[in-house]
Length: 69
Image (cartoon, rainbow, N blue to C red; front, side, top):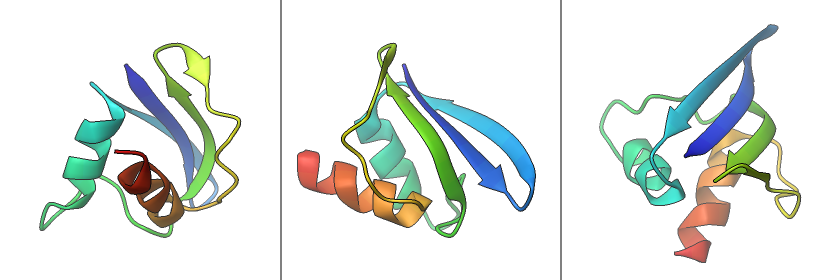
């Protein structure tokens, strides 16, 4: 399971995807589940927090995982 905790304005939210690849695919949709400018709080992939990601936004997270695959 791939989980992202993020801020939508001042509100903390969480979304899950089956995998990082599913997250990348979702952001390529005409109407993605997340906005590019949302601030990423944390990313967990298969129960392990990703401490290598140094970006701040969903767009940066997308680019990070796009280059990983």
